[in-house]
Structure formats: C-alpha cells, structure tokens
Image 1 (spheres, helix red, strand yellow):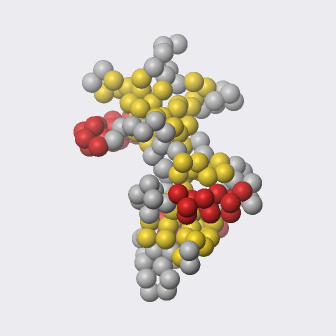
Image 2 (cartoon, rainbow, N blue to C red):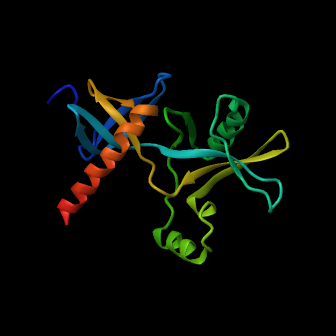
Length: 189
C-alpha cells in the first residue's frame, strides 16, 4: 500500500480521507473516486458528517432567506446553534470546506422526499435544502439547513491525506475531473 492510499474507516467498506484546507481545518470524508491527472491523484469525496449551511431567515414571507457564506463573524450565532443541536445530541463542527453536524440524524424517508419534490412547484432555490434546526439570535431567525443534493469535495492527495483544491487549481482541474467521471460512467454502461 503506497503512502498516498486512503485509510479504511474501520468497517472495511469505504476508505476515508482526512482533508485539510489552507487554514488547517480538517474534514473527514469518504473516498468516492480517485482520479489521476498530470501525475497527481485527485479525490472526489463526500463528508462523513452531515454538511449544513447557516441561513438567515427572512423576517417576512416575501423576503428571501440568505445563506451566510462568510462565517468569520458568525461565532455568536454558531454558539446558539451549538446549544440547540446539543439538545438533540448533535454537535456542530467547524470543518474545512463547510460546517458539518455529527451525531445520529434521522434519515428522511426517500418516498416522502420524492413526494415533497413532486408536490413542490419548480422554485429551484427552496427545494435545495431541508431545515435541520431553527433558532433565534438577537431578534433574528436563523436555521441550519442540509443540502439535498450530494455535497462533493475535491482534494489533491498527498501522503495519505487530502489537501483541499481551491481557487485557480479548482478552476483548472474541475472540468477535467468531470470529463474523466463522464468517461467512466460511459464505460460502465
């Protein structure tokens, strides 16, 4: 086994990879695909814990909810979310790439989820997330939402760990990774 090979997660099923971002934050992920490009291995990964996003909920029904992308100033808000999650035996993790929630989450019933998607009108934004919790901080409603679409992370493999691919490197390799995955899918048919 080479030093660039991901480790097993203990169950022997799907290997896991620890991904680090430029700030040193970590995210444990399942290895979905390994893609060699230009003599370098890139990994397509999914987080082990559940990815979530912080949303500022509009005060009225006519307003748009706002996904909070920049979390640097959101510490006090995330502290309230921590407390609410602990009531459900869940833990908020400030991971690389995204916020995640660890603990036993109830899995949505696939039939109910499909019915909900069929019943909804084609408003693309509101159907992309499911609310996990809602809470109040300084007279403002917030929520943690789970993305319904799969959440993928791209990392460059180095010494058995993943280094998050961001910025220009991501822009450069992302189309090539997609092309390689499309080619693999065609080969499976």
